[in-house]
Image 1 (cartoon, rainbow, N blue to C red):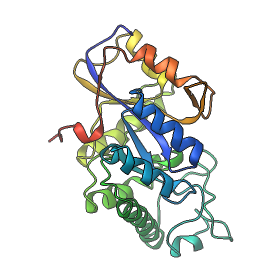
Image 2 (spheres, helix red, strand yellow):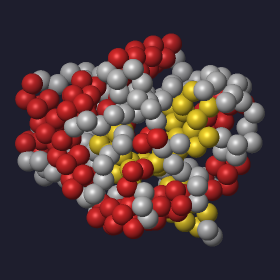
Image 3 (cartoon, helix red, strand yellow):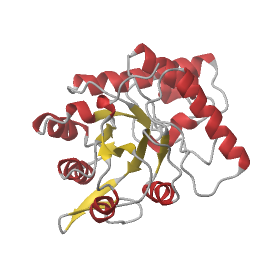
Length: 264
């Protein structure tokens, strides 16, 4: 067990609905107790399978929406005409860290709003109430995206939006300032449910250095990709999530977004 402050811990698996391998890995992580929530991609091949899994295993209240504007085919037609987000073939092409979105004109903003709304509607039609939201490739963190994302979540009565990563080991002063401002905007919009967000490495570092406030709520992001010898393996860095998480979550209060009390 990591030595550190008393806090609550959400472990969220991104990309539920991506494909059968990812779906099976996420479900195992939840059933095994090393993951508390997940977020659903609705426009990729594993969506229907993931909905059935959520129903069968009674985890529908643990599923949020993983807004996707970077991969696959949009649900709505208008956004397919937007060169910022889509190719001539009508598929998402936006690459974060290659392009930046500083502002959206009114038409593009309306198209983005409608696409996110359609993804939420499809998720709910699949039997999911949607307790929280984040985004594929963190596209909601783009400066020009925050207002439209927050607007559609409020209109759809989705209570929580993932913060920008504020558990960081190394960062520039400019990035730290941006993260602070962005998370302030989320909090002012009454969409913040956590105090800290980051990956496993950052979480371990913050705990070991006692950098987490007492009674804070922390979200840790994971990306289960496959099951190997009964263990859940991360899709990106090949880490054994079963081993790592079991080692570091003992004694922690594990919670889901649906269990949080709304902050004033």
